[in-house]
Length: 73
Image 1 (tube, rainbow, N blue to C red):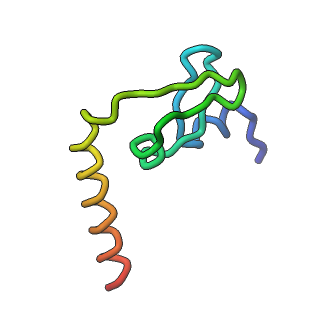
Image 2 (image 1 turned 180 degrees about the vertical axis):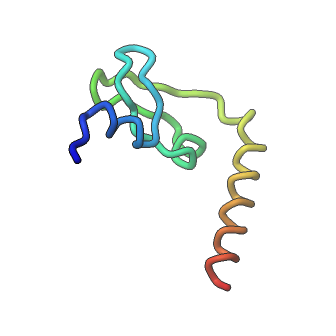
């Protein structure tokens, strides 16, 4: 079974670059924690105000804690 590049990109976590539309590989955790992210293709630098994301960070932390508890059982 062969996979083309398009199939591979759909499985990789990330977001499309607003400039060149290529995938910027990034996880949700990295997105919430990074000060800036860069497109590996065109070099566009993306920055955002992280203050509104404090609630999302708390939710992600709680999910990670719950996952660790399940793994330790």
